[in-house]
Length: 279
Image (cartoon, rainbow, N blue to C red; front, side, top):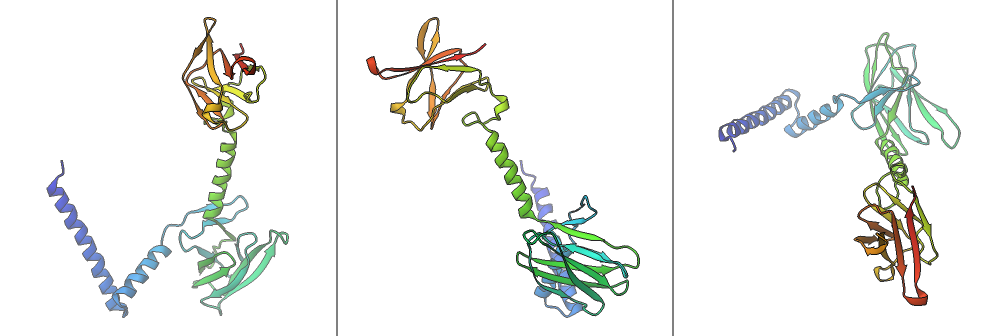
């Protein structure tokens, strides 16, 4: 049952928060000479800039940021070099720095012509500086905050790209799917192929296997249900019709059998295949 009293309190609290945000925006706009929309826009930008960064350390000492998740901050130091590595094959169009007098950015390259990487070497002239840098490339735009410290600095900075992460997952999924045997929907190592197939027919199965619950009979080509052979399970010396269904080139039997026959046609034109479970 809904608690109307609590719901009313929640609505009041939310209204209060919205009112407080609007008041803060209005105060900021008034103090800085910004319109309410301008203050709200700068506030949203500040939120993105201040988002806690997802970063890791690479095996070669790089500080690796997740591209686009926040505005990365690169800390440099006078008399030291900060290296910002871009993606292999990415061509730089422009490098724009807010303070071009006290910050120097120079390009460097590494790797072969096919997989060449561009590195931006950043050098501040003194500590206590802060500016921003925009780098436009053939693939994306980087917005980077630059800060200088009297001692500490990031020697190497690089990026992990969401599309690369997705590509790795796609490749992994493709490998997993390649290991899945059609019909059963599970990896091959979880199946038993311990069946013998005897006899000749144009539709002779290419393989028979079981996952311990069902049996799967795979045929060499697509068949219409009317052209498919009929499956009989041999039990007590007699051929018994069992429940099965066709799914493309696959005949799926709802249990595991020891011996079965597939029969198509009648009289001299009859074709017969025998399937026997080994062991």
